Image (cartoon, rainbow, N blue to C red):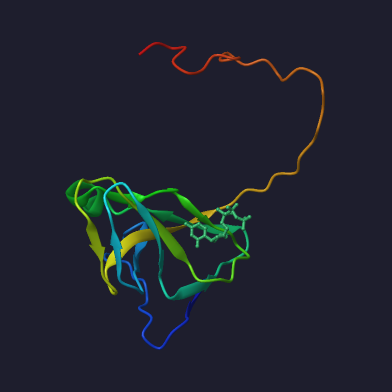
Length: 141
Ligand SMILES: O=c1ccn([C@H]2C[C@H](O)[C@@H](COP(=O)(O)OP(=O)(O)OP(=O)(O)O)O2)c(=O)[nH]1
């Protein structure tokens, strides 16, 4: 994949450890998120994904466990063809205002394969399975 730095002071997202699943996304702006509210935060980057891949924007567990900050639409979907700035929707679930500062690691971005199967439409019965229509706790607690 390619990462495009949109501004002279954009910060490249990096993997904190070489075996990490996600690279940390950096805020390109300051923002104050009041308790219970959310903000759309720019990262100052855009990406060019390889065919049949997507990027998923996921929360950082440290921000969630220490400050109640998570990604509202987690996992955010970055489509293969999206060329705009990657933005992160952060929500503050705590009772304190949360200060996002430019340069802060606010979320992580995981690159994942995408499957787009050919679709066949029909009106008959689905092939029988052992689960059938059972769901939503059908196997017990
Ligand atoms: O957390 C996110 C989620 C999405 N996007 C960008 C990339 C994505 O490809 C595009 C559209 O996202 P999505 O399909 O989730 O949004 P939508 O509400 O369905 O909008 P659209 O009608 O533009 O598809 O917005 C982000 O930058 N951050």
